[in-house]
Image (tube, rainbow, N blue to C red; front, side):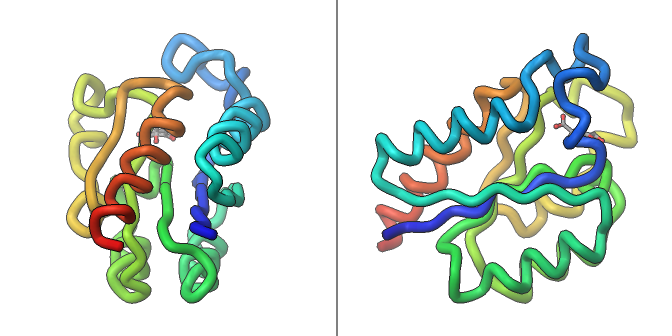
Amino acid sequence: MTAILFLNGPNLNLLGTRQPEVYGRTTLKDIEAMCRDAAAQRNVTVEFAQSNHEGALLDAIHAARGTYDGIILNAGAYTHTSVALMDAISSVAIPTIELHLSNVHAREAFRHQSYIARVALGVICGFGARGYVLALDALLGHLETTG
Ligand code: DQA
């Protein structure tokens, strides 16, 4: 069965209470439940992980090799800073979608730069919590056509 890893970076554990005007009031637990429902309907398995630590995110990407067919990565602020995360994605060669709740291109200039985008299949941003399910469908569509 197809297995997808949702990996969430720094401060995303605070979703629901963190700047709700930007990120909404949905918690990461709610998002996880939404994605588990969507996965069950689509007959795929999903796992969720979150860390505030860059090294832990790197370890999770490395450990995904051989276990997950794709990764949906909301790397939070590390998106804009981390060459190491970019290299990890290239190294494991697992199809990865970059995801953000907010439309980073409508925000501060430093959020327009993404190291992840260079190695991602594609980027989904600006659709809030719904983006997680959009990313799942985009990734499953990709995996179906590349088989
Ligand atoms: C974010 C956007 C990033 O710029 C920010 O640092 C985050 C959240 C988003 O989901 O919109 O932590 O990745």
